[in-house]
Length: 128
Length: 187
Image 1: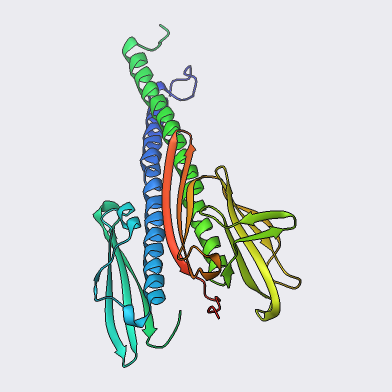
Image 2: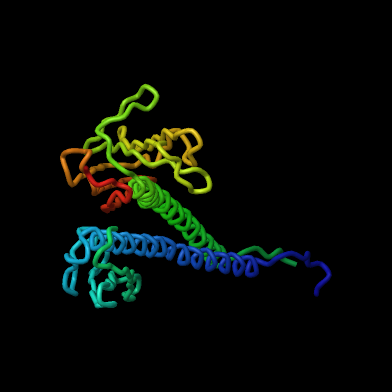
């Protein structure tokens, strides 16, 4: 090191540091873009749960004799779910009880298939 | 010995990199602002829609009947497509029924706000007062299975919320129906 040279950061060093900081900023930005997607997942899950609960309430309210055959069910809220579809499976649980499985399926982020299922038992001589 | 300075090329390169970093920083700020607006609008619409539906469910399920109207310490509320007045059997803090005592709950909208007003009997675990459930209601409607409120067994609620925050608008739509679990059959 020559004695007359004052020590400090060279221009190159400073530039490299600024460049690295720039890359970090861009990376943080890319990370932040994932947050709204996670919010959507939560909302979709909540909506699917409300749709399934509503269908359970409808089935229980109508009673044992009015239980439909297995198949899809309709709910206007399903259109708010991407690729949303609802189906109900009615099975005999025992002689006076039927089991209803209510499923809601939809498409999550990254085209991942999502679904949830709620189950209830409906007996012949019961109210809600 | 000649004093060295920066060449034009060096200066240009440094300026270029600095500008790129600055643009990235501003872009980050704008993106963060947009995400913040989205989240706030999301919470205000979807979040309060969920809260409102949960509050309705918590009152409708244990209700024993829908009242055509009830006076809450002077202010009368009348059941309609946008107002719901419920009578609930009172229960004490241990969950036991207080025989003969009733709590009254009214749900009503005023502008974009939606409120729950409670009038609790002496000793009831419910707390009297008014609670703001949402301030982002764009429409709410109650549909009853009977035009005669004393015969209502089932209430369908349709709720739409809309919130705008920092140019981000969020809408949410929820609906549900519940049966009054404590309704006594008509004599």
